[in-house]
Amino acid sequence: MSTHFRPPNLAVTTIGLSLATFMQVLDTTIANVSLPTIAGNLGVSNDQSTWVITSFAVSMAISLPLTGFLTRRFGEVKLFVWCTLLFSFTSFMCGVSQSMGMLLLFRALQGAVAGPMYPITQSLLIGTYPNDKRGMALALLSMVTVVAPIAGPILGGWITDSYSWPWIFFINVPIGIFASVVVANQLREKVEKLERPRIDYVGLVTLIIGVGALQVVLDKGNDEDWFNSQFIVITSVVSAIALAVFLIWELTDKDPIVDLKLFRHRNFSAGTLALVLAYAAFFSISLLVPLWLQQTLGYTSTWAGFATAPLGIIPVLLTFFVGKYATRMDLRLLAAASFVVMAGTCFMRSDFYVQVDFYHVAMVQLWQGLGVALFFMPTLTILLSDLQTNEIAAGSGLATFLRTLGGSFAASITTLMWTRRAVTHHEQLTEHINPYNPTAQAALQQLSHGNPQRGAEALNGMITQQGFQMAFNEVLHALGWIFLSLIVVIWLARPPFTPKAGPAASGGH
Image (tube, rainbow, N blue to C red; front, top):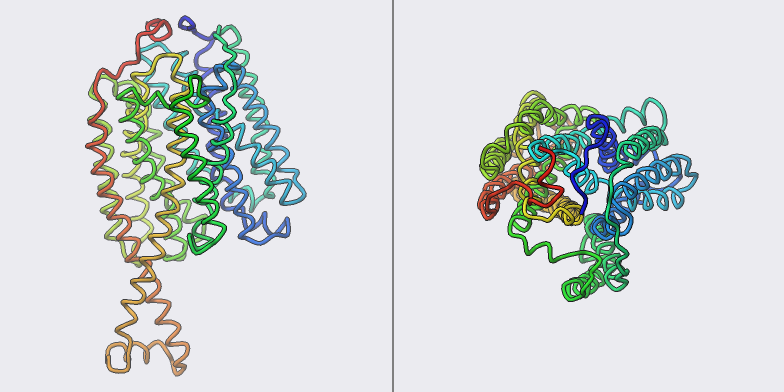
């Protein structure tokens, strides 16, 4: 185990690590708004273009839990530098792709090397900051995690409209090269104890098949109408069998490729559960609000981006204070306060209606930012608090993997619930439109302007809009109760929440 290491310049090291993470997190959302343009340029359908997102997500989900194994084999610094350089290279190749097949191949490779970047950044920041400054390091990383996905669609839209879609990938190249050179230079003296763990092939193959198939099911389920599709049924069965074998094998193997025994730590288990569930609910809001703004209220993607962007303001302003002072109080209280704020903003949104103005949408986003600012750093500190120093990279990789998977589940379930409930409400509302209802007939008369067909279409459009609005309110109301229930989960963790006093944890005061 290494003694506490201080790089020549902590600020420069932090900038290098944060830039690489910002670039990697940004890339999970930057391509979303550019899909129609990419589809048009490469001559494929919009449905096929969504594989640009899926291929990245699948590869990243597979490589995340392998972080612990890879750091033992190659060392954190070397792995980080190589992943960042390969991320830049694959980004460049995505930009020069001439066909959809080529783009998907390099997008999948980009996802594979992106996986370990975030957990290693977390581990390196914890390892290089002295004990009393770790809260600051985690708060800074949390801010990057929140701001990058918000900036992604806005930046992606602007680049695609002003230049051309390959530039959403080209911008990564100089950032990645700069970050990897800085980190390699600053941390070259860091001594790491390397191992040559044998490769657990059964674990690796079942992980790739199980997680890969599961991610495809979650990404494609809504498009394929879930279990009415033979493709989804077969993929789900394959995933379930592979994951069952994976779990049994990893828990009984003496040198597993993914260390599930980390869950023996109470705080890691409670913190990870809270992180996964809260992130899933947060991800649901982040996905549903822009969709609702565009589909139900008729916003453009740019204006939907502006309406949701205030979410990032308070986390940026509070990072310093949360990092500096949070560790002086019970972190469970901070996390609980975060869940109360998040629940409150969900309940506020559950009262929205189709005429709600931009100001109200933006203000609720702003307030939600307070919940986000108080969420990531305390939860991350709690879940890493009882891990040994040499377990942090593996623990961070496993927690981030489960958080990503939670986000994918949430995305699928939320969009499914929203559309299904909207259909139900549409059916219930149309029951009242009949020749015997004078109010309905008067409305039809008013809308038709002498053309009954146009009147019926206009009324149907209004009912559809109201159906989606009612469904949105219901989903947000449910998410509010989910956030409140998480207060119980975070209270399962037990202090102290300071890191374990290993050689790397005790130094640096």
